[in-house]
Length: 305
Image 1: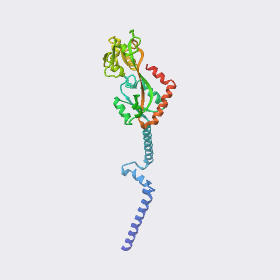
Image 2: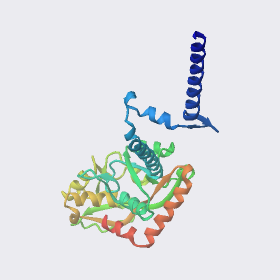
Image 3: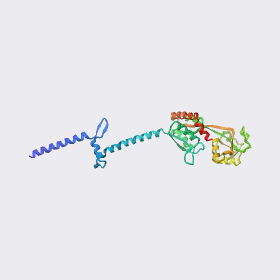
């Protein structure tokens, strides 16, 4: 009797082991060609109440959430891709009227509008950072941005960057009070009897900077330079056409000044791309050419005169 009980017990034990192995070998996760396959039993276990997760009736909902997560991951990847495609630009923070931040905190200015027009024409998303000029140059030198603006057309820069443009020309000339009898001049020597206002520390032309025979009056900035002129404290002032015009308009005194016809200097200004970004430089050049031909360029230039 005891022998039979032992035999039955052994058989039950063997049968239990057999069932256990069969269940878990057929239902548990296995590795197939390097891919981990999650079995139904493992899914049920993972979301069972005893594991503090979702009950079985919520498995389908959870599966949908997993798919949502995957979709969100894909969207994140797309966002990263779009961010990579966005062009990153840099310019000097305050260089009115070419680029500056207005009273509303918006980046604006003649050059900024021209840049924006080109990139919008090309359907290119972009963002503009502003910084001191040395940081602008550093960022382009170290390929941290797609391009920087606006760079004077110096020979060494054409070797160092892809210089696209000119975007515009910077014109240096003299301005007088609108009531002044001075119409023009032929040489700097002919101006030695006049007092000429200029911004302290600015370099204009080598000839003017070295002309010690001229009577010069300094001002802290272009706004004060305009004030000196309209108050007849100087006979004329020197500066960039657009910069002086903008300063005079801000003060409501544009009608009180007049520019002399003779130009001292024209400096082409360019957009500078790092050497690693040739394709973008070529694309921007194409866009700039197209807005110059379709009238958009001139419309912007006229608005900032």
